[in-house]
Image 1: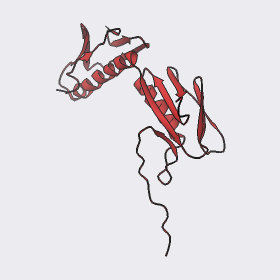
Image 2 (image 1 turned 30 degrees about the vertical axis):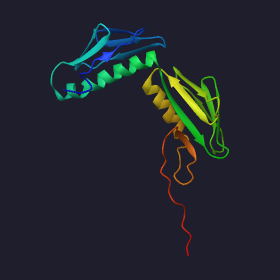
Image 3 (image 1 turned 135 degrees about the vertical axis):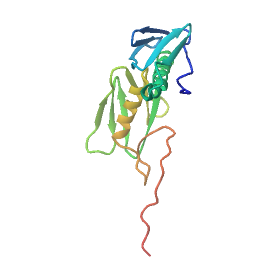
Image 4 (image 1 turned 90 degrees about the vertical axis):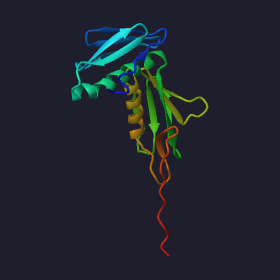
Length: 181
């Protein structure tokens, strides 16, 4: 049995979980998320816990047991606390200007890059360090995808370390060209 799948999802105070057939709706203080779970598993609410069980022991059911439980857990965390990713911009002349739902990035290209955040994602700059972008939202997948999209405009390069990276990300540095003597 799946080690992740057999753990029940604890529902904190202020969060409600409803199961309507194959659709799971999670509502909290930050918003509402829904997920149509796969037919290989059953989802039920027992008091302040959500329990995910398999229909049978087929390979497909075993594979999706833990997945469904973790997706529901991510939704519960998202509507109660929310998710955030922080990106750091490193490089001379590299800068970002967040305004509303979009951010303008100057990353050494011949033109500034305008990134418009998808629905439900907020982008802000850190108050103390303007080189750090904070991406927030209730859907973990959307927050991670928005951060990956911004990082893809100029990923960190291994020689000088310039580019856009996650805060705390370690970039393996390479030695430069050796002198020929």
